[in-house]
Length: 632
Image (cartoon, rainbow, N blue to C red; front, side, top):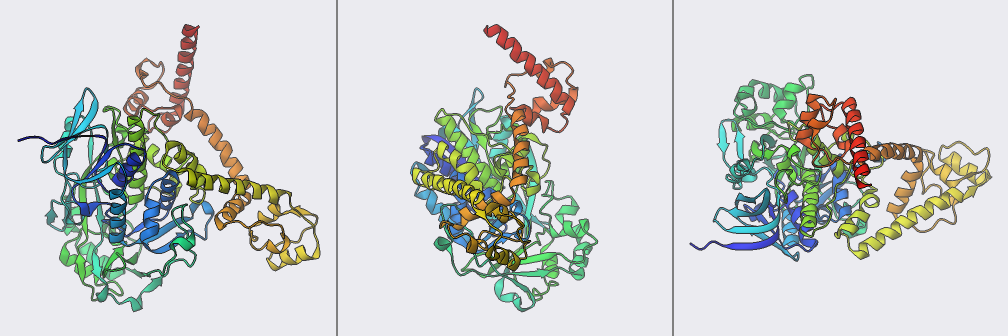
């Protein structure tokens, strides 16, 4: 039988959120790219929660968009409700979240990919890597076809040797009953790649017609819509929104769960994989938070043209009969009909410490990896990694320098650095608390931080870049104007301040100083600012935040300066840590395992102490001195 052989620049394995971003990035950078999926129905599939964004995750989506990725644009086209979370707190933790029409999201992403130049979407199962002399050169599919490539991106999500469980029922499928990928794991092991076994889960889907919404709390979207994509304005995407609903578990629910814990695969030993700490099942919640007599549940529509509703907060792997019993104790769900059972899913993923900060494998050249396959959880975390992996795979094909986002640049940088540097024994979830410089890494300024880089890479076009430069200039000019616009302590000014609960002026001030007062904002100062220019809301937001938090921002920028000094001290790739005198054995072992690219990264490795870093700095100084002598 004749074997099919084809040649591409980049092969992407898996078409979930990571794979889609990777393939689009590579193709848009001019690389001939093919992306494989076990099923066309799994392209940009949302097998769990029907939303994009949320706390810290909204930051990731905004950053993806600022770099030229697709997720923000796609959810702007297909959302059914939009809400800004944490509005009562500071801007650093404001996070946009949008409920998605799942089917529309998937179909729209698939349509985008099928109409992107240099990109081929192919349904087939990849079963084997082809590696020659430490370099990946292609993949083989189940049919025996061979696809040669200059770079490969693995984005297999939760499909590798996956199995779905509830009670004693085990289905050897991927999410939503789709085909699992059962062969690639062995090829990865044969090539020396270390695999983990992780687990996640999802709640039941219920019939909207069987829900009593009259006893639940209706959850509305925001009146003012903030787009995810910086290319959109509110008027471009505003629509009539669809409500979600809030209800709660109760003691009866918890009693049923406790009485049936021995029938849960989580507690019976059937599940081998490690689950996500920050997205626990309802069984875990009841056990771990035994003092709580209720837990929030959000009843969320799966789409505009379906009666399926998602029971957010009640993920489970309990048996089918127990699921009926416990769901029907919840207020409003007394007569609920289940459309799809809740289940847990186990799958193979890698130890991400095997990756460089570029998301290329350390031991196999030109092999990149992104998404849940890297031991993370969440659509947004997956898409962010996929974008970086796809960019770097393309840049490697093009013979250009790859990118590394650091912790002071982006949440994406924090995410990737945590994965490749720290020991992760459970699915990793992004949180605002993980970002040391979160006041600088706000979602509202993601374009200010990353659009320049997106343009340099080639994913941001000239038209968008020019608009960005205009916005940047407007922000700078308006801050300058406010700082130099003097305001006297006259009757009009004092009356305005009094009306807004602000202290009267004792002497003249400027508008910037007034704007820094917590009780005042840009709009309420309009009557005493007749020369203010016409500016878009997003420009005004940046100006306001920059001025109100100026002291904190300045302090954090100084911290970043210190951080950069260590990040810029690069460690030679061929360094032999055994030759570094006075370096502790544990530190040698950990440094050899991670192979950090900088002193900064080395300092974040568990088991490497500050004294080890000092020893390493002295060694590198001596090494550079000796090299300098030789060059003379």
